[in-house]
Length: 479
Image (cartoon, rainbow, N blue to C red; front, top):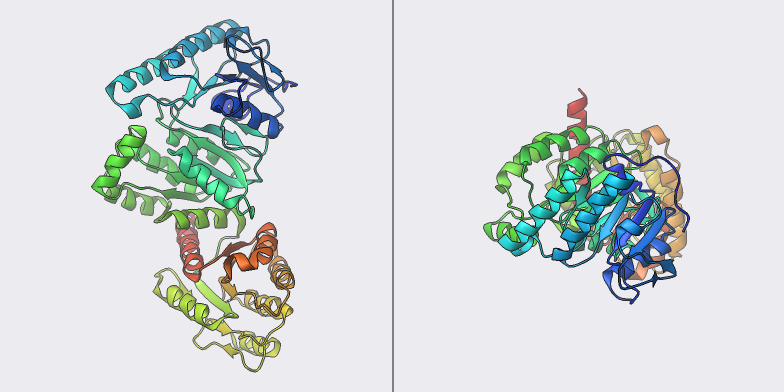
């Protein structure tokens, strides 16, 4: 492994741009987390040095293995620690010695559990770990976490996350399982492009607030998605989120709305959640988008990562299926931030020119039922007309697509119309494919082309409502 050149990284850059990574607890035996972390770094083609550390092994996956971090010859800016909790204190002391001797070892990710989440004894271990590292000037993510990743460079400290499509969504989470579920769900269709990830666990040192401030300055991050159970300084977190939200969307999923949920969060990471109503009001004032469900969080994050912001809440519903189209109209009408668009006379005339005589336009306002009397290009032709109407801020398109049409042709027709928009006046298009997995080829084409697809109309409407909510908040801040 060739070590990346350059000066020693400073601050949180040591987590995301290390010249070399030591995996302490790496095992030559497949299946263990230490072995898997080394394997993932090899599979992602991370360009820095990778140094397995284990006194009971001489080689891991073809790489030399060192007894301790003190014996690693190359630069070790980041250490990933995967050993039992008591042994983490020994590793921390070794890292402190290395930092004093070599000047590197600036950051540590402690994947291991067995700390504050287990009770008072574990809390004491965690405090000792944090004190040892802090005294040496070493920053800590964790313990009890998956750590960090950067899909653009191949960096990962997770035993679950290997190569992943790179993009603009950065994720912060107090649950490693939650963020991995999102990424694995989105992977088959490449529904989201990942920029950076931080699974913070117990937050003995580096906090969500500090990471959020860091991502505000990160050029590849277009949206920040956060799974939040609770933080010690809720006011500081919300103030930071408000500053970030002026520049890019911040989407939060926060459980613990009930007393039982709050207790579950405390047992998970040892974090005490603040009263939910306080967060709710603070998020609204700060311009932070709060997702209410897991599916809404998934959808909103990926929509912000891919789609342009709507300029308002005027929605056109373009449907090739009557029933789901009617449901979609109901959902739009029930969202306070959305309303059905009013088509200009020119738009209505152009729609009737490209649609069948059986189609209905503007009954009610903003709704177009193309019916089944259509060909593949009809989808793109009608969409193009709607996107050119100044009274339309966004379009929700619903189609099976019909079995008698080539679904790839339908998808290409939609993509062509969407891409023809001027970049400075582009509007979001959300596509509902009501046949689910039966329309997989169309979904793959649309997702890879930069659109977001959904199985149910209510999902698309809720995601669009959250986009409008953020766009209105940002406009308010900029006045």
